[in-house]
Amino acid sequence: MDGWVKNGKVRARFDETGALEVRCFGLTTQAKYYKTLLRDFFRKDFPKIRPGYGDYDVHILMEYTGEPPWMDLDNLAKALLDSLTGNAFDDDHQVARLLVERRVADREGIYMRVAAID
Image 1 (cartoon, helix red, strand yellow):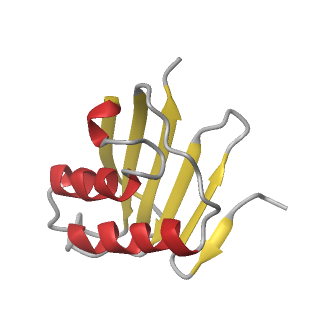
Image 2 (cartoon, rainbow, N blue to C red):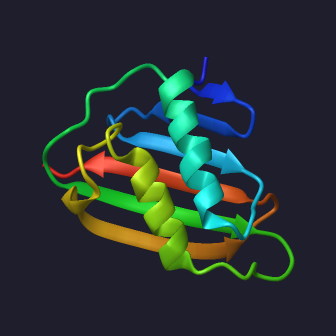
């Protein structure tokens, strides 16, 4: 078993270090779509987790095929961080380090890794 909890386009798990990994397959230029999609996933499908109260490191990667989509990465980051509020951390002001990037890949989607900073 790979540890992924899956529902439709979304899957998530805790890796061996305790970091939360989230994958969402497919892309849309509407960043707010991800906020609702991931909030519903964490509310309905992912085992309830208690949000942490320390600092967090978040890495967001948008993977695309062909031409880069017309999406502002800052809007994508805000939507994704909002979807994690109350799940991975209590509030997105706890994000002390944030890396958001895009790259060409074989499959379109969003990858996110959230790790507590010791």
